[in-house]
Length: 607
Image (spheres, rainbow, N blue to C red):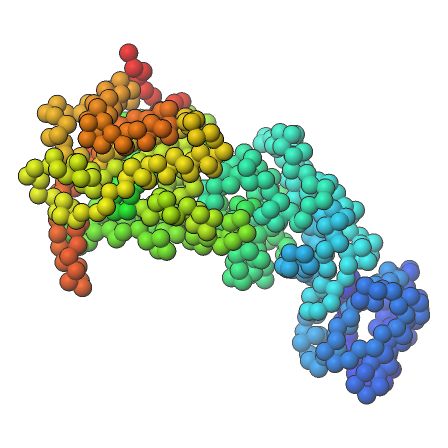
């Protein structure tokens, strides 16, 4: 095969000539190619190749080689790149036509990239330094064992010299220079230059601690120019980190007239992926800020119910009170949460409204690469907030429905990092279940809620203490320091313990189309005083985490659940959909929004 043109031929018996001569059996065209470059003869099963001068044969200089059945060989010299495959299936070899795409094998990382067309191969290789190129082997399509060293093929394939600026960033910079959207600051581009790096598409190549964006899946940071694109052409299936079925991730160096990235086969792609975990990013992720809202709580504390109800309530409350639209950023990715919300509010019986406990290995998690290993990470649920009057203030909110076990002390390891989003969150919500607490239960005389019967070991203060340790460890903070992240302590199931707080109702969080900071603070002081008397360890641990703590009483269901038998005859506890009446559910989120995005949410200050 002529690896430059893709021309292929078959030699079976007798003698055979390769060269620039018109009488050559396999004709080559190059001003550097001799009339007779190589004479081929067959003796038994062996095939001998004699060249007219020294060439690089399988990377080593020589003038001849012998091939046996099953062998593959490559030859570079005289302006030619030739590949030879000694096999029996001639039809398969010829069926590839003039296919001259390439794969690239990294001998240090032991992985494959490609297939790349010649043009894309040249631009893709431009990102590597001279040292990094020494680890690469260029393998033409059709071969499996042998290839070319980059330095042997560099002049023939017109591969550009090594550059200190990665090709995809150079292309990205060129794409945006002079456009309305500016590239990253110069210092960010300079910090991303890697003179002796491994391939830019390697996870380790992108600094995970600094960057304009935080991945909502793995929570590592990256700059705009580091975001990867996802190939479209079906032949580009098989990503080295995600597996054979995943479409390849790549750093774009070519774009069409619309500014869309082109994959190796020239198809336009609009989907992008995180350079660390390679999971697809939500549509429009790079267009606006994102705020992660972390909901923390013990197992079976009601986080799934709370999140399902919160999404429903926020959609109504934000639009009715402030004219803010709250909608799915990625409906396909949010489908599980949407189903939970629909199941809860569209049910007619407790059996239909029942939400199963979040499982550590369930559908709310996915396996992705992170820091060199495959781990289970919670799927993000992302929603856009926008106001037609101030579209420049639009942003997105990211939620997770973690299993409660992920917040327990034994779960925070490199193999189980599913709750590490708390360290990069814009707001933390701790859901305290009073019915798990013995002091609360002792005060609830006459309460008939069936959850009273199911006593669990109360580790909620331990979970808060573990939250503090994780945040400070991940952020490299002194144990005596506190974060400024807003922390909302939500005392759940308010409908069951409201009488303990007194006859005076809680003040509304929203008055006259504005969030009343004064009402929120008065409610918070009242609840905090009560919690200091009943569960002082919760208050102490919360205020050791953050310097900005506020206390809320919430009731996602607004009523006590009921017991029922599932289809297997097991006794379950679930909400009666006919009695659903959520109370104060949105208050904590509205307060956190006033702390993180005051320009979006109108509020009245504390007098």
